[in-house]
Each structure stands twice: as structure tokens, then as C-alpha cells.
Image (tube, rainbow, N blue to C red; front, side, top):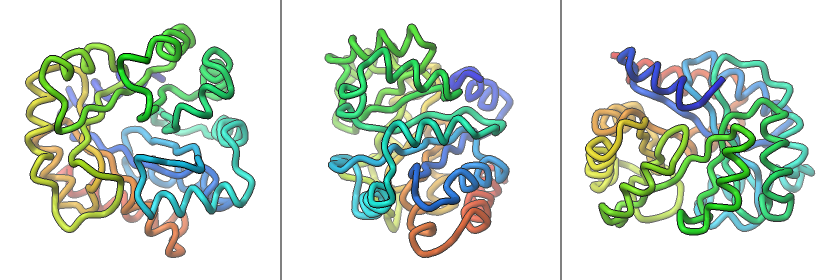
Length: 256
């Protein structure tokens, strides 16, 4: 299943896109969490590969990553476990460049492809240094999603939209991941800039925590990514059923 093809088809059919983030290895039932959010209406799922120095992530996802690392998670084990998933939605890993570099571009890309994973998000790998990984990913059929920040100038935004695969990840605010009380003031502007720049699916992420925020963000872009709000529930003891219920609430809000 191809990430961009699936998201384009869903968007062109009139759906607002919903992509949850799940930390790989967070609890022995994390695969069931992925299955539950897909069953609840996720259009794709980001699987976070735990990393000890996650510079983009705030306290919630940092804690989730540390718990997974303490339980023995490694990039190889997360990818191997993800290969057991048989879900009706594309999967993309979210990781940092250190594990990609350590494993090797071609080897890491091949491991994702062998596991049935469609895409990769590597937020600390900038557009100008993408070639090594980007070429290996393209050759293996892995779609590399690029990020655009509110401060990204238009000429660079155009290059990011052109080079991104799968979708373009619009960062809704200047800061790290985490729940927010309201949608960032930059979010809707980011969504509109992406929509004006590219026909590639555009999703807003970071700080989107509630149904109303998801609806507001998806009105400007093609959809939203929800991470910390879901992970907080898992850290507080919710299991797959609770995760599915939360994503189901967001799905309902987006569909109304």
C-alpha cells in the first residue's frame, strides 16, 4: 500500500485525513494500539522509533520513548514487530537520523520495505542533506515525508513540497511536540500556505489535541497528525480500547 496514493484517494473522496502517532514499544500491546486506531478510522499511522535524544519531542513523547527504551526497544525490534501488523492503512516510521545513519541508508530502507512499511519521517535530516537517505529510500519504495516550519520561506517551502513523498508535514508552531489548549495561531496560515503551494496531501501536526482543534486544522490543510494527546492517554493507563475510543472521537469530529 502506498502512503501518498492512499491519502490522495481519501482526500479526493472528500475525507479529512487523520494520522495518529504511536510510540513503538510502549507497552507489550503497542501493536494492538496500532490496530485499534486503524479500526477507529486512522488514514495512516506514524510509528515512533524510540530514540534517546528526541530533539523534536516534548516531555510526553520523551517519556514514552524512554519507557520503550527501558523495555528493550531498538530500531530493529520495532521494525520487526511492525512487520506483524496486517492493517488496512499505510504505516510510516518516525525516527531520527542517528539510527538511520548507524544502520546504513540502504539497509534501513530495505528493512522498512521488508516489514511492509510505506514511509519514513526523519525530522532532523534537512532537505539540503537528504540525498543519501532520500535516494536509498526512493530506490526501496519508501516515501520520505518532509517537514515545513512556520518560518520556512516560500522558495524553500516550494522545494520541500516538491521533494517530499507521501505527504507534507506542516509544523503548526515553533516548539516541541505536546498537547496545547488551543490551536497555534500559525497553524491555519501554515495549512493555507501548503495548500496554495502543492497538490500533495498536506497535514498539520504538533499541538493538535482535541476534536475541535483537529477540525480547525483540517479546515486549513488536508488533515492532521495527533501524537502527544494519544500518547498521554497510553501513559496514563489507557490501552488499545481507550486509544481507539479517542481516535474514534477525532474521526467523528472530522467527519461531521
